[in-house]
Length: 422
Figure 1: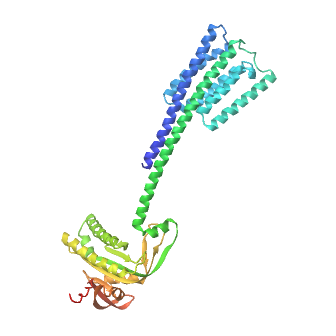
Figure 2: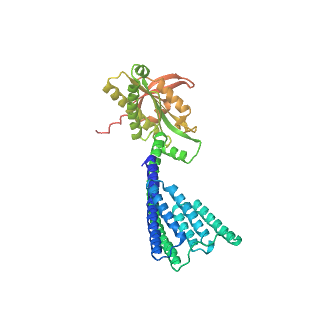
Figure 3: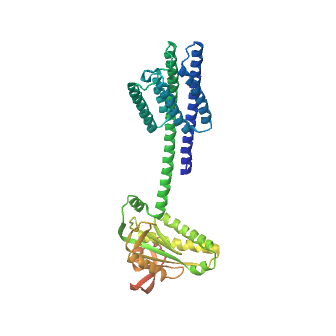
């Protein structure tokens, strides 16, 4: 599940909540209108008509009108409007019914229960403040003699009907509260499931990011980078660096479309990557049509020169098969040098694990001053490979910054002497 799906799921949850409130309001309107209507009819039959009960018809008409509005989707506005309207009606009824002595004062509690179901916490506190202000106003009005004469008719039936209506409303609201609680629990479970899905998605994205980081950097270096250990640099006393370059590639690339050139480079360098991975070597980077790989960094190994010699021979053979299959007039030059080097990550954007030092420069010179189809190595590499690989002396060559250096052609693994008596 991606972020877009998650957002849609949360939006669907809000729509479900609005729909739930709409259904609850619909039930409240119908049930309350029926209760008030039944009480009004019973009062009329018992000839205990209360002049204030004429408000019943207004309330019933209001509920039915609001029910229509709710069914059209205006849930939130109706919730606020309903509480305010009922509060005004009850306040008017209490004003004409003796103030705080009126049985209708209990209707504030009924509205409070309704507001608790429909409104948010802030709006609920506003309702409580208005109710307290109304009560204080009634007390002051009664003390000042401002209340009008009581308009209701005292009868035995009147308190009964008032409490009956409150009982019915309270029962309905209690049912709605329990229903709301159950739905809240279900909504919490859905939210937990959504959170679990999002966490799973985040974990997958983290894994993908880690895989991408490990494709760019060695695993140990990537872990250091994630722990914000910066700068990352380490000196290695013994390593072998290889540079390989495709000869005549500039001319080749100029004569072909860019996509063909990129596809060819990707193909051959992917083959080199596979060879490096098989031997536990660390690819450093590609520079145009040049390829750089190291043995003994970032994990030191005693056989770094031998492992790199095997890599160089395998690269030459693989490249020969590659160009022969495609009938390409291309060749490869390879150069090796062994010695100390510094490796690390610098900068804060577009990280790359790189090498520095004389060993790197000399290995690059071995490649650039070599011959197509040959693997040129320094005397340091030849010493490391003695007895295991055949290194044919080439003589000495002038190397910029180094002077005259003795160099060798790496040929093949040294032949083991035949066993005595064979």
